Image 1 (cartoon, rainbow, N blue to C red):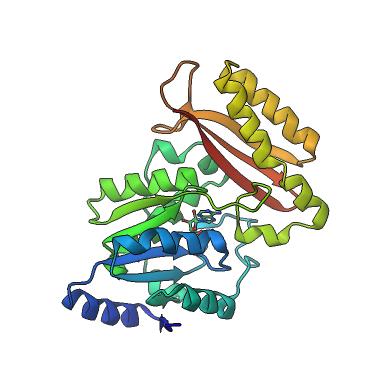
Image 2: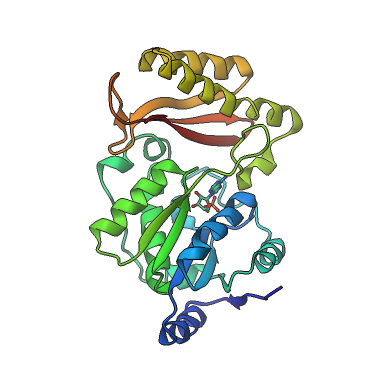
Length: 283
Ligand code: AMP
């Protein structure tokens, strides 16, 4: 088992990366907020063949949490995370302080525009500005040639691709498939908050989306399929359906029947947790 370098400041990261770059290494970045699970570790596996050195960052980014969200009690497990990343064979773990990303006097915020106003952007005002800003900084600090993000956060992946393209940030962005539990629930750090009965309800979420996809492919119209899925989710016991929508994945606007590309994105509330899931409808 190789022990990753533990880089606890921006300057430690910069020094480390300078040496790697001098050796001609390609650097891969896996940004996370820690409390790592098998979904995070799958990102490490997917990026590995693309790069020479893998840096996993662990930073619970205050600017992407809104008022009343769980920033203060977001799950944290630094020792467990480092053990998992050692076993996964990553080269470095970047564990910055807030001041390494947001030093005194910091005022910049990256706003990507229309795609960040709907769905997660509507339910979490300011969230994507925080994400785009911190991800851009993490890529620039680490001089990453490639960075990887999970398709679980489907809108986030699209926003990051847009940010990097619009700002000419020289970094390839990879997406990784959703890692799931055996019943289909997408792995998430916040799943630890689910009580046993809530976990059973959560376990029905993915099956209901798969049913939506099957009925659409069999000819059901999009808006009717969304309504059926919403009712099925409520009947399964979710506390609220924030949205279940079939969208054009290029624009995050509603897909019309007959569209060439369509993707269902959904968020439900179970207990205190917002659960996200999504999948391709077409093609
Ligand atoms: P987080 O720590 O929740 O900010 O997630 C860090 C990265 O891991 C993001 O790119 C997420 O999209 C990704 N991720 C989280 N859960 C999963 C999952 N179940 N499958 C694939 N990627 C995931």
